Length: 240
Image: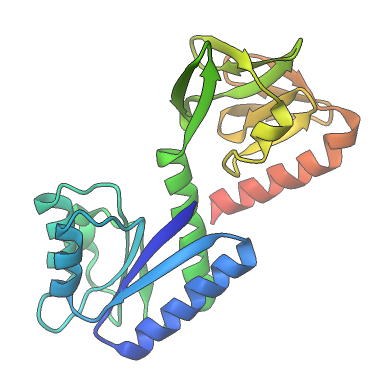
């Protein structure tokens, strides 16, 4: 998929800097990114009014004609858009209470620090994946859709794939390794038969994973090193 990212700032140098950081981040992470730039809040609002969608928006607070807080309120209240992830940019740090209603994910202080931009991009993409990605599967000639955030884990058995949810299991024909290539980054393989959602992992030892609901799943020997590394990386990302 392609992430559509917007930058709105009346300072052209800031826009160019952000655009470069975002594209370089996408290149380093292997993520397809499209960046659109606006130098005025009115232009951005007109774009969004036409039912165009942005996944992530870097928005300057001190826009000359219409400030970023008004633009944010327009997105949330007038357009009723709660999905676009907003990250504010400013040369000042005293806007906390005014930003509350806009529900931004974060705040970047000028001059921009590349590592802070990248951290917020990582959080934004992680949040987007959890909220928006859908798993599609085929069963009895029909296509079904299920949010990844509802899936505890997948397991394969007798050439069948089972999806474990909190209160039910769903079965269909498929191959677990093919599914593993398309899932969000919070899903990891711990065994050739188990693909788990780390958000529902309760405990982990060298050989076993305990999932929400009490299931104990075996970590097979070939996966143990990579599982430890992936869990550590995931915990570090969440702690940022």
